[in-house]
Amino acid sequence: MTQLLGAALRGTGSCLPARVVPNDEFTEVLNLDTTDEWIRTRTGIRERRFAGSGESSATLGTDAARKAIESAGLTPADIDLIVCATVTPDLMCPATANLIQAALGCRHVPAFDIAAACSGFLYALSVGAQYVRTGAAKHALVIGAEVLTRTVDFTDRNSCILFGDGAGAVVLSGTPVLTAGVRTIRLYSDGSRQELIQVPSRVTPNPPPGPPQLQRLDYMRISGREVFRFAVTRMVELIEQARADARELGLSGIDVLIPHQVNQRIIDAALESTEFPADRVVVNLDKYGNTSAASVPIALDEALRAGRCKPGDTVLLVAFGGGLTWSSALVTL
Image 1: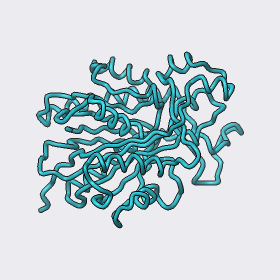
Image 2: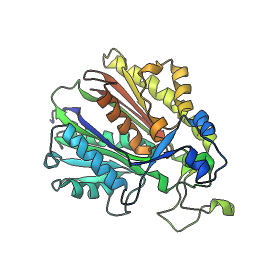
Image 3: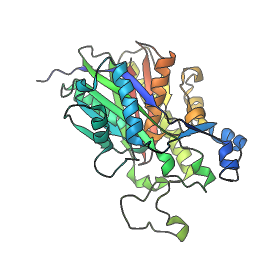
Image 4: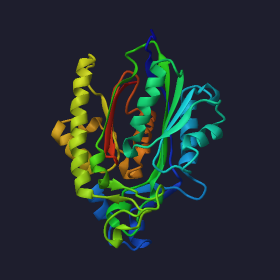
C-alpha cells in the first residue's frame, strides 16, 4: 500500500506585466463614461497591469514559474509535473503548460492545462497535491496565468475596468511531515449557472442565442449583480467550512486569508458575515484588479515575500469564478 506524503509549499513566484493602467485611462484614453472615483468606490481597484507585445499567459507563467523554482532551491530539471491553470491559453493546442515546459528547459514530464476560470489555480493545486501525496511526483509546479484583458469589451464600463493580466506559481514537494503543506482542498462547480460569466468564442463558430448585441463572441460577458451575490455567498460558505476543517485537523485556527482578488465589496461583505478579522486578509486588487487564475498565487507570493505570513502559519486560499466554480485550500506553511 502506498504511503501518503505531505504536499509542502516549497516555493512561490509571480510575474506582472510592466504596463500599469490607472483608472483615469478608461476616461481619458478610452472615453468611457466613468471616473477613477466611480471605479474605486465600486470595486476597490485603482490600477491594473496589461500584457504588452510579446507577453502572453505562457511568457508570464514561465517567469513566475522560474521564480518559484528558484525560491524552492530547485532547478527546472527537478520538476516532475507541470499543471497550468488558464482560460486564456496562447494556443488551443498545445497546452500553455507545454510552452512553459519548453521555455524552462524541463525534462519530458507530464505538462497540461486546467480551465476552471478564477478557481483554476486551486483546481490545479489539487491535482499537483495529489501527485505529490501519492509519490507520483516529487516536485510539482503549479501555475496560474492569464491575459484576460484580451477578452474584455472596452466599450462596457461595468466589466472592462475589472481585469488585469499576470501569473503566479508555486512548487509543491513531497514531505514525510503530514502536518505541513496542503491540508485540505474543496472544489465545487455549478454548470447550470454557466451563463453568468462567459467568453463564448474561441472554440466554436456557432453564435449564442439572443439579440444582435449578444452576438459579439470574442468578449467577456458578466452578469454583475448575480455574480456578486454568488461570490459573497460562496466565500462565506468556504470560510466557515475551512474553520470546521481546521478544528477537525486540530489547528488553532486560520492565521491568514488570501481570497480571489475581484472586488473589495465582495471581500468586505464576506468578512462582515463571518466576522473574520480584516487585518488578517491579504488584498492587492487595488494594484492588479482581477487576474483570474493568477489572482490567488500572486497574492500568496507577495504575502510570503512581504512577511504577511510565515512558516508554521495556516493560510486559507479562497476562489470563485466562471463555471460557476468555487474552491478553497487550507495550507500550513
